[in-house]
Image 1 (tube, one colour):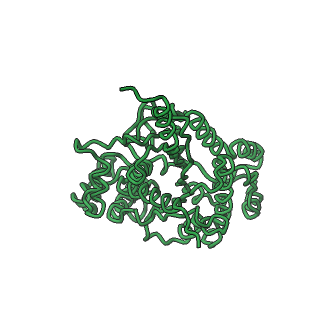
Image 2 (cartoon, rainbow, N blue to C red; image 1 turned 45 degrees about the vertical axis):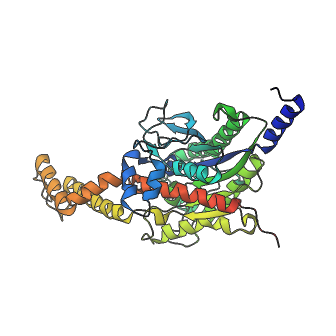
Image 3 (cartoon, rainbow, N blue to C red; image 1 turned 180 degrees about the vertical axis):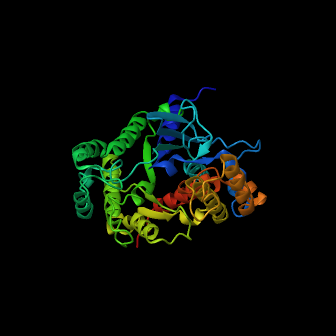
Length: 418
């Protein structure tokens, strides 16, 4: 039986009216947003009863990483001085691509994997993640946004440079400074603009990434997550005044500019924005610089203009203390290796008579006495990178992604009116 044309027309009109805009989430930052956690560390997540359910979300019944059927990703990154884009259904492999085949997803994750899985489970509708991340990039230069203006060297740094015309400790020689200034100007904002160009290019035709996208439904920029900071935290020229509590105040100002400019350039004035606050070292790291930097990263969320739509998520609680303790011991092994090679006066090879074979044997015994076989096994199970990369621990990055998604959902809720 044929339906009357008026009923068919009404049905399709209702379907279009009920279609929700495609939810779009943007993730950006430097190497930890890229994602250094190898999929080989997934099973460590299941060792903890509190996170075992998260592992079940991340792996299918076949033991392979979950492929999310209603979440897609477009990922702009770079490796070996070349930028490239990876796109497809969300699964593991959209992490750091150093040493990987740039034509297909790799074997690492960042926060994007569980961010998308959590969003998919909460929204029950298609989502698109647009991720842009590159290792070793700063907010003060690389991601510097337009309203932050040109970089201006702090007076303390300028005075220090004037005292060292021949250069020292990372200070260029006086004759090299014009070139340094030119390179600084050329580098300023480059990655902010690369990020923005990629986001706009994807949104100009979402169907290229999301096959079932219907232009009639449109899209909604539903959130932004930022995970960056290490290069800023360790830059004493941009942020002089070691151990001063206000040392990183400019980071707070530049991040506030970044949020404003992102919203302006994307015509999304209230876009939910999540700041992933630096957490390497975990809660135990209470060094003055780390404390000051974490406070500076979180500060924009407290500004009145951002009330209710910008939130800071502390990532230090997701650090693995047990893996961190093993990493400290591994650091002692590396230090001993250095002492042996440099003939340090307080160590076994102080007279320089040990052969290379003897040094290796000494170091092997030193490591075996310091790190137990159980700790070696635990390290292989849970870690795959250095401390500044949260040890490459998938558990840490899975908890981060989940927390970023939940925070985004929380500030996306309609505000109650009196």
